[in-house]
Amino acid sequence: MKAVIHLLLFMIVVSCKTSKESALYQKEINEFQLSYKSGFLDNPRSPLNQDDLVNIHFFKADASWKLKCRCTKTTDPRPFDMPTYSGVTRTYMQHSTLDCNRKGTSIHLELYKNIHQPINPLYKNHLFLPFKDLTNGDTTYGGGRYINLMDTNIKNDSLEIDFNTAYNPWCAYSDGYNCPIPPRPNHVALHIEAGEKIFKGIHKTPDK
Image (cartoon, rainbow, N blue to C red; front, side, top):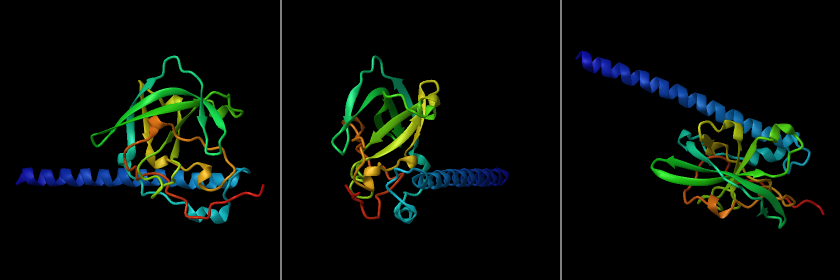
């Protein structure tokens, strides 16, 4: 009888801990989403205004899409031109590769770094992860999505990525922007139901 009581108490403690961690994670993602939306109002080049923000939607936060990945630095990286949806190119270098596992399924991705030194020193450590997946054109933007990462977060050849922070390129909202096309190695054969969904507003065409 005591063993049963101890087991029940253990299960209650674990359940409470799990619920608390889930609530904290949901709060963290909610704060990210609020900050993401407010960013459109702070940037003079933004394609969206206050009225448009109601049309931005996200999948429910799912911690199983927060993955700890093995990060392998690319040796002798060479600059290459990454095409954009506007037809121009942007020059990047492959920084590293990521090997992740989600529920027994392997995910391999490439991380890139813009070769041009950013004007703002706060961005000097930024890494760029553009990707496509099987939700594109259905529940998410057809051109793929992006995740921003920092090389300073790579610890012991490991980097955590959270697909709940995946966001749309500005081309999802309006013409007139140079949005990199996710390279073929970053086309993931999974339905990544995390992060930003397809924009529900009207796609804009700025005046020439």
